[in-house]
Length: 282
Ligand SMILES: Cc1cc2nc3c(=O)[nH]c(=O)nc-3n(C[C@H](O)[C@H](O)[C@H](O)COP(=O)(O)OP(=O)(O)OC[C@H]3O[C@@H](n4cnc5c(N)ncnc54)[C@H](O)[C@@H]3O)c2cc1C
Image 1 (cartoon, rainbow, N blue to C red):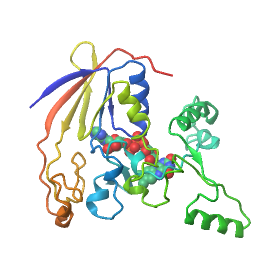
Image 2 (image 1 turned 60 degrees about the vertical axis):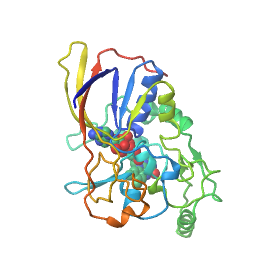
Image 3 (image 1 turned 90 degrees about the vertical axis):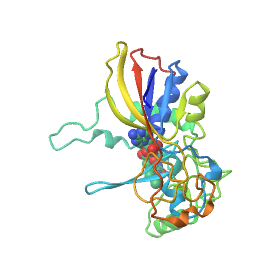
Image 4 (image 1 turned 180 degrees about the vertical axis):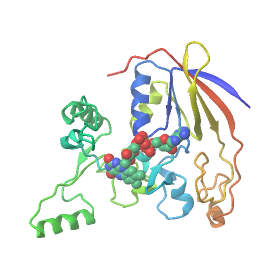
């Protein structure tokens, strides 16, 4: 089945890079649709186990040429699986020059220029600094090693609700306690409160110039449905790899590792993006 819809703004991916502009554009009055290839999960779904079905459905492993990238694959993107260390890039990063002597970053991007934006995001997440009583054991150990070596170190600012955090060390599995301030807890709900629509299990496939007058791009995407899966290994990004909590509700489905999951029928659709420039909420 092929369906064509129209929207002002289409955001592909719901991590930091997608959720934050989605919020600002929706708050500014634009019709915003967010396509997210992974499932929409919440705290009870983030379990503390190493079953392939638990973490493989929210983490994607991309094995490239000489580099392997781990990235989130669910609503909230890598903000769900990241470690929430919230540091500001040091100024010298922006001054770096490439082998031809050119500045690597646009000249308008400096630490000073970015500081007000850091302020804003740190307030929205929000970010907190741990005291030495709150850092987990490995952090304390590292600090002690630094002290022994005659060095100092600071506890890292974290996007974590310290009162809720249990220091469980399962951050890669998503936060079971809603302590990690991922996009699930701030920008995404704020975006939906302003009318943005999040579509989990929707994977963008192609972007092309629109042929319909008044629209700029045509984005084709596939929609996948949650069907009983059996712990499929490997990259099947658009599908909910929900083995441990099988979509059919069979907790033992993870035992069937390696057996091919049933591919969900994917319907092809397209979204047309309007030319109207929405005002950005500040
Ligand atoms: C394990 C881990 C720990 C980390 N710890 C830290 C940390 O402590 N501090 C820090 O600052 N940074 C950390 N990072 C890095 C940080 O999380 C990322 O830099 C940041 O989340 C990137 O944001 P993004 O929006 O660009 O991408 P992502 O957050 O990865 O979001 C991309 C989203 O797009 C979706 N997507 C991709 N392709 C498609 C498609 N075709 N159609 C639909 N959806 C699609 C993906 O499923 C994903 O949800 C960590 C990352 C990881 C993986």
